[in-house]
Image 1 (cartoon, rainbow, N blue to C red):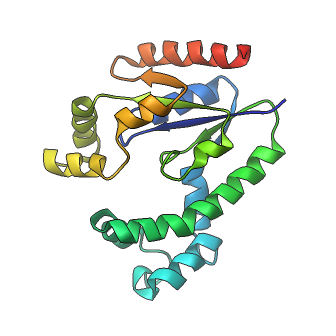
Image 2 (tube, rainbow, N blue to C red):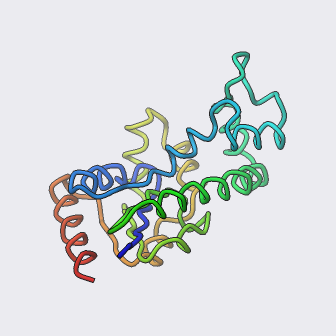
Length: 195
């Protein structure tokens, strides 16, 4: 029997740690960022769709997508971000469904924008990796070497983590040590296996 569990969080909330623990327990994880990255390679579906929608000025001399330039555009322009998401999310969802249909047992889908992209419709349950905003800002500043206002703006560009927490079936609070996070993950995995 197949069970699909979505894993989401916010930027710098500790989701990567949680995913690495889940993988180490031997579970299959479908990584939506990796799928997106692969589909943005030359002549792949998202690459072609972006070229058609945004034009050739968002591509480098070697024909690769200029991710930095496109990232700056969508970070500062909500309409352009929605346009990009409306192009990429259906293509990514199609690939995720293919992966799900090839698998059996408990499968985890790592989706940063799970609720924003309506990927929760593919999931039986959702885990949210949660972190209070001040700690999230501090970790992001340290990770990306950016100032407070830029870190705050990056976090504000995503759906509020409190909202994600309230919508999720399981919540992992990652403010503590790695061991504390690890223990929470194992407890939730046991609950999922037992359902």
